Image (cartoon, rainbow, N blue to C red; front, top):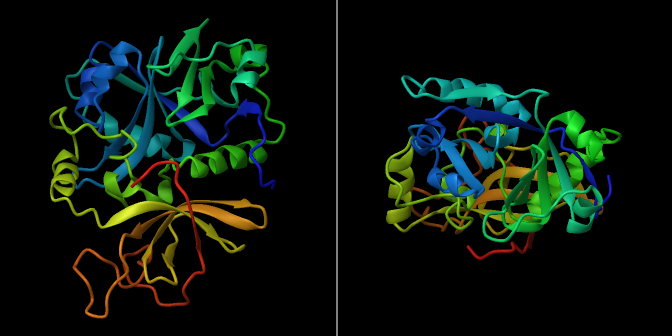
Length: 317
């Protein structure tokens, strides 16, 4: 694994696509996700959380207004459970939800120069999305130096974007760039582990507080309006080792939480973790602060603390 993110353009093997088609697609999604999906009709791209009725994030969706339907980009391992959960709410809505499989692929491009060399236009400021010949190009949320390219594999191949020569390196570089951009991701190991604000979605523009009701909205709104968000997403440098997503952490400063993402870089590991904002006090602090990391089954974990160096996020929390 290499430490620096090399400008490159390749298919992203860890990401898949759900597609929403039908006249009720936007209104259906409006009742399910945290952002205002009416903005998709204006050609805008959106980051949104799909949450349980308890306000716990089931998936993070990057929604794009592709000509074939609304596209949701998310990890492949979450395609099936997210599809099954969403279909339960279709009822009489005129919307079809499908895993596009190999019909639509997602490629990642680092740098506008590489986008231009593939013969594709860069999105204009304001919407972050452009489409030509059924190939969609979207600026990555809050990271204008990277682009998603979405289209049929054979069409991507025509632009030199369908290569799978080193898929593990492609995935490594993209996820490392996500960490450096402070962009969280949800995987099976962290499904239902966090409320949207713990992932900084309120700071990242992934939540609309004026759109009305949607699944999990009551908990998300209550968390915001109480004004006491006790856990946040932070960027860290961890010592070299075998770290896993969802793993519990206790830092030397007393804060505790869980790993959201971790990728090797320059002999160490760069990570995103949801941590308590404040360390527990001798009196035990308030009820919302962890005094010890939680295990996967909800129990407290004992053990050594972790020497983690804080790294800056490109936005304020």
